Image (cartoon, one colour):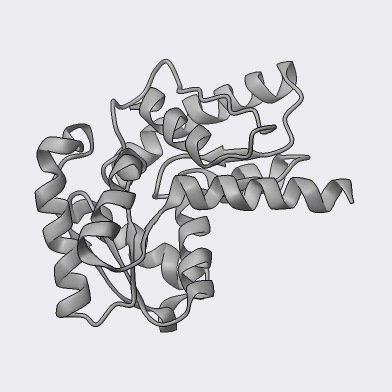
Length: 204
C-alpha cells in the first residue's frame, strides 16, 4: 500500500518534485480506529526523526487519513507537516458547496468527524460514511462498494464533492469521479499539491 500511495503521489506531483514514501517497520499493519492510531505513534515519531535528520526535505505528508500524530509533528518540525485528511478538507471547502467523506470501517468515523470539527469544517460537511471495506482490502475488488457510498453521499446527502477517507483509495478517485460525474477528492493528491505550493511560497 505504501508503494501504491507513492505512485499516486508521483502521478499528481510536478516533474521537479521528488517523492520519498516510507512506512514504520513496526506497529499495527493498518490504522483502523483510535487504538491503532495510538499504537503507531512511537513508530511514526521515530521514523519522522530518523528521516528528517538524514534527508533534506521541504515538506512532510502524513499519509493516513486520520492525520495520526499530525499536530504533535507540526509542533516539533522545522518544516511544514501536512495531513491528507486536513488537505482534503481544505480542498473540498475551496471547491465550494457541502462535502461528504467516505472512509473504510465505522470505527474510523468518529475520528474523522472529530478532525472535521477541530479543523473548522463542520459547516461544510454533510457527514462521514463507512464503506465497510477494511483498509488492507481497499483496491479494485472493493471499488464498487466504495463507489456505492460515494453515490449515496451525492444522492442522499446532497454532497457537491466527496472525499475518499483512506490513503489506500488514492488510485480510485479519478475513476469514481468520472463514473459518477462529481468531484471525488483524494487526500494524497491534495496534500502533494499543497506541499508544492508551500514550498514555492517559501522560496519566493
